[in-house]
Length: 241
Image (tube, rainbow, N blue to C red; front, side, top):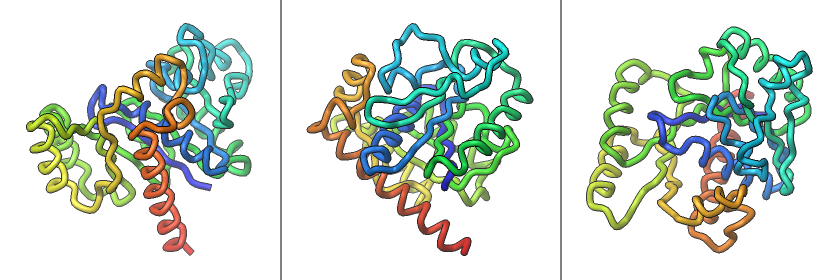
């Protein structure tokens, strides 16, 4: 069992895109996956067929006096997910509930992917993870925010980076891709996700590219991302033995 956290290095980096499609790629391989959303934007359900206006989620169930697992859903393709919902919780309460979720899920799922807001690390919830993914873009804002982050967190060994929204046709993006590669070295996963309108089309259909865009370039890219992340997790597990 592995715990993976994912967040954008900056707002709008595409963390929910990475989480949803990577989780769907895991499910396609036959892995049992649970996605836990801690991002208050409450977008994760839209990738798995949940109505965009549906505010049901684990926070709504919790503050209504029910159990958090009343907010658990399963996509048609077999990915389990806990959307955040529309109720606000302070971090102390959210931390306690997250620990309950992880304890309950440990024996039931192979992989648990936690979608974080971009301003909080998984450690802020009192939880450790096997792999902490930061999503970056080849944009000036992302490079600037990454530079700030590296100044304060450069020694974190379990952090790896995924580059999202790459473009071949924009010179600035090409240049900043090289900058990010230089900044991150082998901490940057080799599988990049390029801009693909199929991703937006899938989201508009309340789906993901693993289900709705079988021949899209991004479909292949997320399969590759699943491969490199699973390989990383296998290496970590071997080192721990």
